[in-house]
Image (cartoon, rainbow, N blue to C red; front, side, top):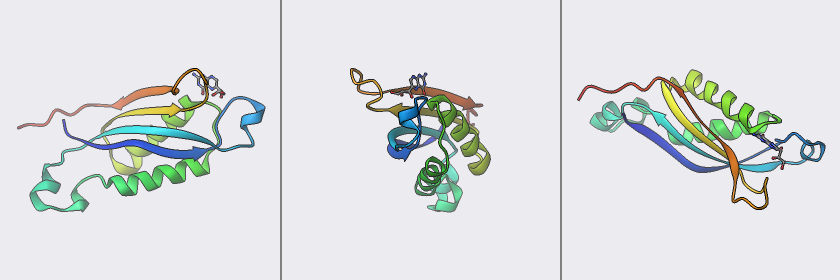
Length: 122
Ligand SMILES: Nc1nc2c(c(=O)[nH]1)N=C([C@H](O)[C@@H](O)CO)CN2
């Protein structure tokens, strides 16, 4: 299975369950593995035949701007749905970290996998 990767994407958003978190923007970092068959794009050297990681990163930054969830779980789940629907991603693994939320930890967060892996014929 081929993947397009986005690693350590830095986002700013309103997120948190406590009152003091509702009026500030906090940093999240995102790792993504997005399943896609890269061979058509590679064969024709054509960006339109693959997932454009720049366009997807920009869309994710917009998503972070538009929403103010309480939980990282909600952010991750809603973002996964968006990526699968808008970009036709059949399977993804998404790791969302909230650095600084627990001072004794480098980061805390969630990792989810959604969709079906499609093993490609060789
Ligand atoms: N599983 C989770 N636990 C906690 C979350 C969360 O989103 N998911 N959030 C908080 C607070 O917002 C925390 O980040 C403030 O430091 C606590 N636990």
